[in-house]
Length: 368
Image (cartoon, rainbow, N blue to C red; front, side, top):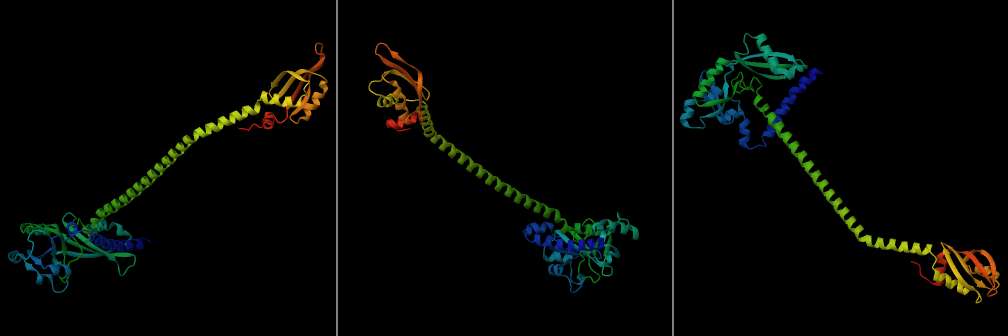
């Protein structure tokens, strides 16, 4: 599993390098040049202490004849004015200026190549890391599936110091310093100035910038989503407030009608509970004989008590019961003889059949 992880890490780096180049292609040239290994397009070849200028097409394509045979001496280049004579340049060294050694490590150690290369340098060579600079190339070992093959390149700091002095005198700063291959035709993908990183060091320096851009894009997308949600929420709140205001307005407009309805219901309830005396007297006038005279009428709730004077008052109870409007008809007190008129004084109690509404319907009064 560890071997698989290490090998996967190598291929992941290559894929990441490719994607880094693709993403850099989205930026303007002015931005890409800030992270390019050769911002000014100037490539120099250090030929035994003599600076030569590598032709622009030769520097980008490589291959073919040796670099030493095609490079132009620096004085001739300056005199002809073929290009920039100051700025940042990529510097190539002959293969003989670098010490190459190879060794194999487990693929699981791919996550710590920098430290392993430093330890291997001090363990297997007479050099100290303070006296030299190193760079390396890592690839899956063709012989051992679970291992990585490391090509380590070493150069003395003293050699680089002398080179940088010559570059400074020429008005040029070194952006990258690498070695040519054994044939002297192509530069190796390493950089001694990349802080002892691999040749892809400068490109990997872009990773924090790309990560920051991705983070900024994610933050922007999140902010846009939050703003949209807040707008939707604000719209819902506004619609809810509008609906509440309309409902309150309708309630306010309906209040007078509701008040009138309640008032009518209250009046109707009062009329249903109390017996109107005029209507009751009118009904009794139609029922009682002409020789019967009422002297008193009392209404207590739904009960009625009548008192009067007449002859043969025993016939009154059947008359009242037969009317269909009165019930529970009975004497409220014993019948007595009035000595002055020789008539019978009576007091009769009864209730209204169906309440006061029956009297109103009989009289033709419309209910509320």
